[in-house]
Length: 155
Figure 1 (cartoon, rainbow, N blue to C red):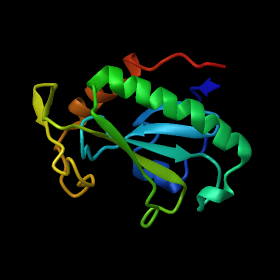
Figure 2 (figure 1 turned 90 degrees about the horizontal axis):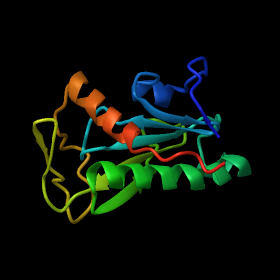
Figure 3 (figure 1 turned 135 degrees about the vertical axis):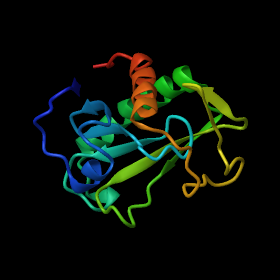
Figure 4 (figure 1 turned 30 degrees about the horizontal axis):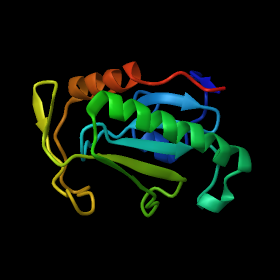
């Protein structure tokens, strides 16, 4: 079920990644946020709402919803930017709340909003240290593009 409540409490990880302004889509157990530091075009953060610092601490319902959320992410990003591969990185070293960095991968540079976006890690590991510089306007345009491609909820 997709909700758009702005009254929810955001954990520290979600706030670090700009919630609520960067929320692309909110679900009952998860939020999808634009990653302000665009390692690649359309990079996102998928953050759990439950107070968990280990993946195994999430409820069965959270895992069930994760199926729908990941399908929506992949559908929207494929339609919006035509990625070649997608990586989900669960690092949780600095930000301990359960979350993934969702990194669309591109074999060739992509053009969007009068800017070139490169994937400097292709075809190996994503290079999170090399960021495609964006501003508030570019990030808003990226968010709007992803949101315009978001599929309807299956439930």
